[in-house]
Length: 415
Image 1 (cartoon, rainbow, N blue to C red):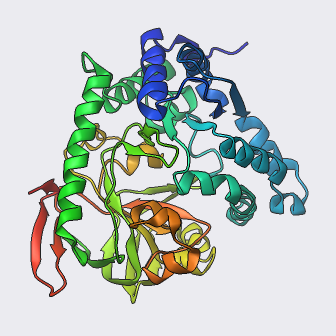
Image 2: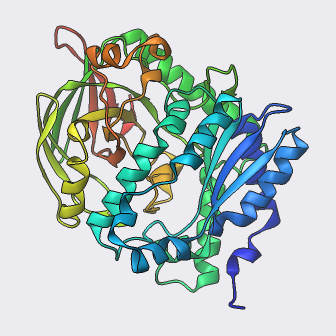
């Protein structure tokens, strides 16, 4: 048996993350079922969460485990038409579980660059097939019908990706320390620390919602971008109440406040401030030019073909579905690491997302039809890909209807 440093993860880290996942992330209710997806690398946390969930009164915890070796086996051995298939029957079952009131927890922890060496076109096909089949289950998550959350477990493969020059044990210890800090487990009372953090984010949202800005303007090196905001947009961040009445924290960690842009009113040029890890590839130094909401030009110093595939997914893939503000001083940013994982990297910097919008960021969004969402400026797509545009040199202004600018961020910090 090969040495697996993951088995040496500190118990207090696993129990701390598990308690956060169950009580802060999900706020799991007595008698509620839980559908949990986990990569093999996050199994120690999955076990701790299962125990914590049952202690909290869970009905049934159903784990779905994904093995990286089996994922790679498909790319190495499968027939070409395999890449247009997805387990729709499984996703229909998950959608049924959500309809029946189950909560959803996703664990991350495997090597985020697992598919880096594979054919980008095959990866894109597999992802498109999966996204299409997953739609019924995803609707409960993107529509916030249920309490759901994502939380991370340090793993040897992921640590090796972030710290390629360190010995495996040292790399894992460093990643564990970073996850401990960004999850606020370094506070004496992490649950209280999260409550305070959630209050802060709620105050920011209240301020932005009261201001009713028509647009945002981002200015920094290589960036002068004007992002129109959707009609009746709502800012969200931190803890939020799902339609089932449960207040949860969908992301741990989280540092952002975000809303839905107007997909037809984005203009100017923008430059990424961090590499984007997408479908196992690293896309570096992205620059995009927007006209009338659409990315009319997009280039990258590395991963250009992956970027092109992504933007060509469907008609909505080249438009924005989200805009988010994150201070440069966030714990994720201060860790100074590129995690190769959106859960962390998006919380290091202000960002925009190509593709699908969140209906929950529109007034009365849960009652709007697809056409009504589109009429307000909401975007529709199979993808939702966040990329980072904020930095310590980014200024952000809110624009009111007559174009008057109001400073929101200077040098990456809230004014």
